[in-house]
Length: 300
Length: 226
Image (cartoon, rainbow over all chains, first blue to last red; front, side, top):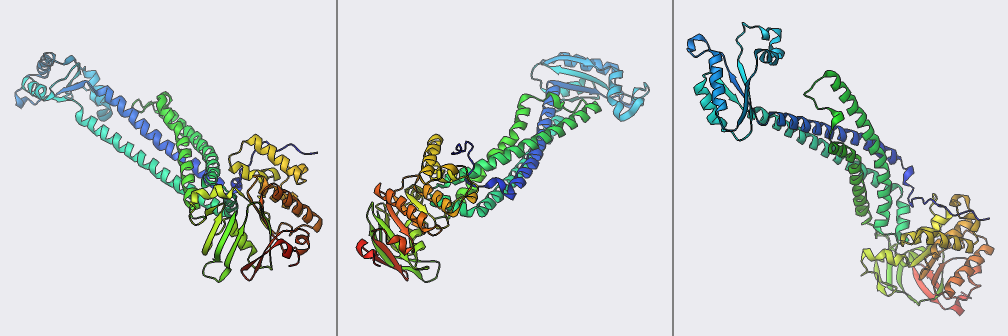
């Protein structure tokens, strides 16, 4: 009695048994792991910069330094009031409030310790300013210096510029790492596909003689590589998720409010990380196709 | 169907293994190809199924000058040629059905049609009970029949067979040749390379006889006594 025909179709090329298959899957897992971490790092820096940027945007700080008696300036409290008067009369300033000595002490505590609260220590007065429109900071600075000697205006521009430069460098570094990983991945796929073509040369030649187009043969390699890189990529992504979860847990333990919270990452950041194995898979498929088509060109 | 004009073939810088080959095979013809080992039978077949390009001369297949055919057009031409290889060239990891299905799948046939046609043809060659068998589990004769089924599944215009009776006893050999006869009656052009004189003499077909790289075409009546 005849057996029922096969319902599951095998690939024409026995690529699954190749020794390069396991190598390619493991390598993809490692590369996706590293790429996901690099991308996560870039996304965290982005998020951190955005939060700091938005926190400081629209804010100015006026610092009024205590001056020595020899300067023959008005007392600190009077200069502070004069600065407040100038600020409140300036268009574009929404609020201007003086920080208490206690607040200033707490701000300086990381550098000066508990002594920062010592009333004998000459402490500057700080005015926290919020704007609600454009402010000519150069003109305001000149008026403040004139009205309250020892007053300086800080619009955080320098600090923000440094922060943005740092974030840009981090992005560039992450991009470079991802590009390097992608390049290594392309080379690994080229190697694996060429090995496969060499190992199964007689089968490829036979298919060729039977009328298989180059695309038909290339599709076999593509399917094989897609399967391997997808499995390797998902493994790498799971490992990266575990690592990021561990880092997030450790960061939460530090109560470091400056660090972003991984658990509350926006959906697009999660989607970007999830896309890493898919991107690796797509890159591998395109590389496999290109390698096979180029190699088969030499066949008559 | 096939026309060779002053065709020569050499491998690399070696001597010519085929010299001044000229012949014409009309559509629907049946020819045997004979010659001693090393006479160039396999090389001539390879030129016919486009595995090799001639070193010189003109090869015309299906009315097309092969020297002018673009590489991209070759697969479609090759799919019109069925080849039974001397060593069967079955893929060990594929079942008999999947081996036979290769030409259909390459041509983009629907999977349901593939299974139906392959099952039918394997039954026709007496392997209905071996659809899922791997080649390694089949005898030489059974493998030969899978190879033949694969060569004819696409209803090729040209069927080439290299020593198709080489690994089977005379009884199965006769059965295989009758199978080729049936295909020939359906309009397929057939060329069979063989050195089994006893079998060849039972059929009245012209002969392409190779001797030291040169070809002599013997008509059917002379072929019987060659």
